[in-house]
Each structure stands twice: as C-alpha cells, then as structure tokens.
Image (cartoon, rainbow, N blue to C red):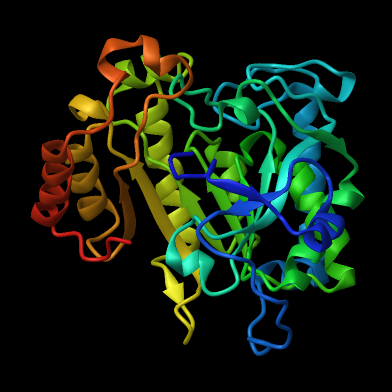
Length: 342
C-alpha cells in the first residue's frame, strides 16, 4: 500500500497483552483512546444478514475451494495451497499475520477518534519494487495463526474501540478472512469491514464479497501496463484489472458515506500514490475516476512516495517527488473536476 504504514511505535504493555500475535504497533501521531462501547448501535453491517440467511457460509466455502488451485488473484497461479504449494505470493493455506493494532495513520474517515483496527497480513500478490512494507510483503515477516485467533483479534480491536476492522493486503487470504468473520459473529462482531488492497484482485472474488465488505480501500497504482510490469513483478494487466475491480467495488458500495461523527460506514475510497516522472499516470487516473465513477468519488492522492526496497537502485524511482510534481498532480485533480479529495 502507499500510505505511511511503517510509522509505528510499540503499544502499551496492556494493549500488547490484549492483542499479542506479532510485532504490534500503532502510529506515532496519536496515543490510543480508551475503549468506548455502545456507539452506533442502530447500524448493522451487511455481513450479519448474510450470516443469518446462510449465504455467508456458502461464500466462505466457495472461496476456500479456490485454494486447491489458487485463483484468488489475477495471477491465477493454480498452486494447491491446501497441500502446501505456493505461487507468486508465497502463501500456503496456513494463515500468516504480521500485526494487529489500532492505527491512526489512515485517512480521517477511517481513523475517527479511536483509530482503524488494522490487521496486516504477511506476503503479497503484487510485490512492488518500491514497497514501503517490504519486510511484511516481500520477506513475509509475521506469525502463523489459526482462524480462531484471527476472529479473536477482530473482537479485541472492536473492544479496544476501533471504528472498523481494516484488512491490509487481503487479496491472497480472502477465504481465511471470511472464515474468521464467521467465527467472530456469534461473539459479537459488528464493525464495518475495510478491504484495503493494492488493487490487483480477481473480479470474481470481489463479486463474492458483495454485502460482506462495507468499505473498499483500493489503490489504483498505474495507468500503463508496461510500467506495472516493470515495477510490480510482471503485472502487465494491472490497469485493466484495477479498473474492473474498482468499478465492481463502486457498484457494490457506492460513494463514501460517513456518520454524524464523520466516520466512514460504507463506500469506496481510492488511493493513488503519485510517482516521480508521472510514472503512475496521475493525469489519466483522475480523468478516469471522474468519467467512470463520478467527480464525487472519494480519492486520496498521496504525495509520500519515497524510494524504498529496490527502488533506491532504479534511477527513475530513486528520489522523492518534487514540489512541482505534487502541485501538478493536484492541478490535474482539480481540472478533472474531482470534488472529494480526502
């Protein structure tokens, strides 16, 4: 992902004991708020109705079956993860999680006053050469967990007072997530679910999340397939895939909706990290959003690119943005007519 997700500090001893699984952390920018219960009890996330009808169980089973010849993402590696095989993401059927904690470095509608309940999954299907979380996504740092422990983590984040459960880099572990949600529902889970993805998802899998995910938080990284292939492990079809899945996400949840506190409950928020030399195609991205989804679509155009991981050895990626590049990106957004820049 493109946000500043490595700006971490250790939790208090009490919080670490509550959420212990791996290196647990939250943003340096804020201290955690105390748990607050009873807010927003008149609202219900869609996954509860799907569980009552039996549909959530059916979808969980369909998704789990995909692990036998994995096609959870557009790479469609075909690895039998149930038998320990791995594809590009390096994951078997065993769930691996890096950390779980209230996080205050996300967009304001997700953070509110008490933070977004982020769960960072180890490994990644996109593998960008400038990844700011390369230790998690490329190296696979984290701990193996049972599905039941994932459910407990969701409930602990809810008890801590987080406004949502934010699944970070979820594309390769969607079956595990849905099983975890099902295990947490009888014990009281009722927070909105955030699907926080690099945008390289299988549209068929995203369709199965209709009514389960409340808030979609995809990246739209590139507008040019050759650029995507060069910097994201050969993902030449990224622009077409991301466009298709974001359209489907928008169809499911529409524009971003917030409650009376300004906290998101439902909708789409797209992230776009501006790259040096306009390698991300920011001018084309903002025009695409305005034309395809509407100028009111929530968009975060991000300026925090820094040369991480292998990017330090790639000349065109080896520097931060210039002030002129950032001003130009904002000018393109204004010219496209976007009205909801987060």
